[in-house]
Image (tube, rainbow, N blue to C red; front, side):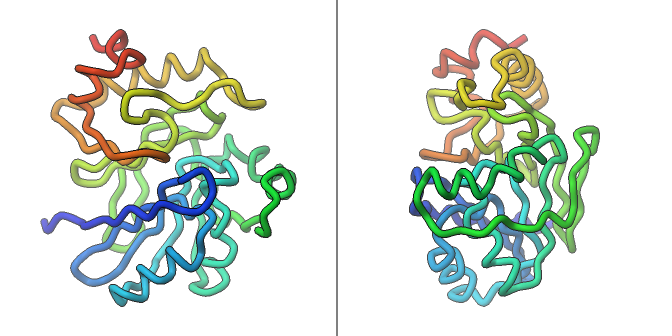
Length: 212
């Protein structure tokens, strides 16, 4: 099968990474549409893509700030893990805290934390449930690309000092994650530069200790 392509778009709040995953049919999936509707939509238009859905690695405001506008324009389903329902409900508070205009998006599909796969059109993603940074963090995997949200960053990991974070869950998730793959993977993170699993296992002090 033909590998999908992807584009990273660094959005306007906290330099959050939005990813557009697209195929040879010009269908696309929007992952974590942060604050920057124009940036995201400009890329979609420039490639003449047809969005099929929005996927959220988690429901923090900086990862979903333009979801409502994209849903309005393209009539898209939105997939969020049901364990992040409280985070979604806090959306307006987060908007106020960051001082930006953004509406709470309507979640059409709640991902169950036991779900292992998500198929949208011709896109088939594997799912890993990896709570810690938030209760409903998930990673989406397609080909050798892992969209891991704020679980792992280049040289670091996601914060666990937020109101709904759990350092204990984070430790369990990292251990499970690093032992879930038999080959190297491209890690497409929620902030910062992309990296690879093997690179992080060699150099990231937060991950090295979990490898079996």
